[in-house]
Length: 106
Image (cartoon, rainbow, N blue to C red; front, side, top):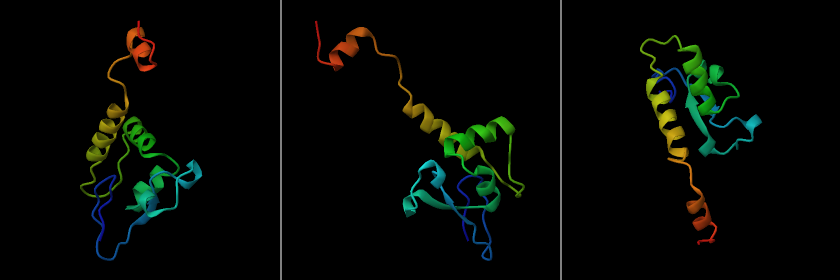
């Protein structure tokens, strides 16, 4: 049994899911276990060569959803939005802040 990290599908005992590279090998992702997870075949096929952020944007743009009963992409999309917000600077730096960073204070 497994739970797809993208859509939340719960695979049955007889279903094994598919090994999925979080960052695809073709995009310079590693073949190490930390870059792998088990996803349902529908999400794995739809994600293809996309990164998780690209997959989230594609899901939102196309309103794609696997045809599993109770499939829910919202938790995955919410997590991706939180990651992208965390990586953005809160505000742009002014000249004074940039000079302080570089050690040239007036």
